Amino acid sequence: MKNRPSMIAISYRLILLGMGWLIAFGNPAWGEPGTVTIYAAASTTNALKEIGALYEKERGVKVISSFAAASALAKQIEQGAPADLFVSADLRWMDYLDKLGKVVEGKRRNLLNNTLVLVAPKGKGFPVRMEQSFNLPAAFEGKWCTGDPASVPVGSYAKQALTTLGWWQALEPRLVGTQDVRSALAFVERGECALGIVYETDAKGSDQVETLAAFPADSHQRIVYPVALLQGAGRDALGFYDFLFSKEAAAVFTKYGFMVIWQ
Image (cartoon, rainbow, N blue to C red; front, side, top):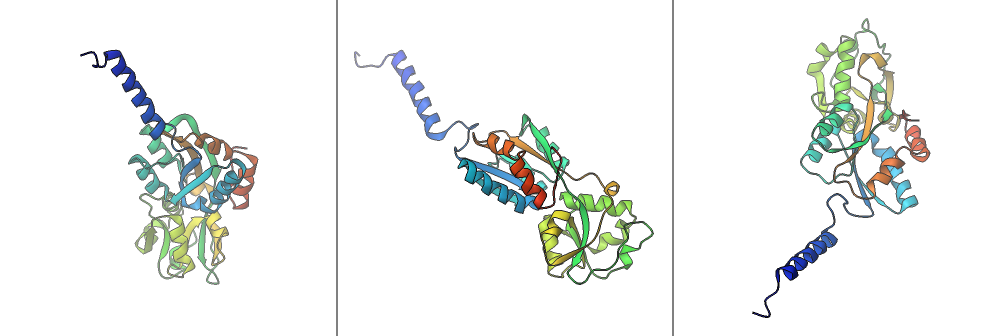
């Protein structure tokens, strides 16, 4: 019986075992050191890739990015996807995650604005007036593209604008709803859609489309891009969150056509 461990010894071993587990696997709230994972709206792809590269060079922290429609990313985060930060192209999907308790309190801010534009394949544009007296449905033949209005932010903005201008009912049957704004842009670039509604930043980055007109700002909800730190974010994520509000990041966003709203 003298070799039987005491309860104190057993408890001590259990504490050491628990400490070893934390060291081996990490605190779930810390995440993997030296890495930041950001889930962001497809329209931010070019800008955030460049900003991520700047951050990696300056801080030595690897930035892993996943770009898609804000709706798809929000659903993935809801199901437990390992994202540290989320950038949405509208407030709805950020609110969705916030209500689920996925957003760190006090670490959500509005970052950017954008403009909604009408585009056509290069060389196939025509004059457009953004007013109800203009008959856009009769001005072109074939299909038009934007994100799925039921879930994709750009599609929701597009439906609002077309409804305001009185064009939605006639155009809805000709809609090709896509999974994100970049997919809609690609359809127009290939000439598979005669028109597309995308963000100005996406149109600006393509030499295969031409912008016909910008939709009036009061024809749809203001296009706002919020960013938030997510629950369980890695230890380096807060640094990148702050970096998004730096002068260096602002210069990149501006270069790609975004309007920085926090300065």
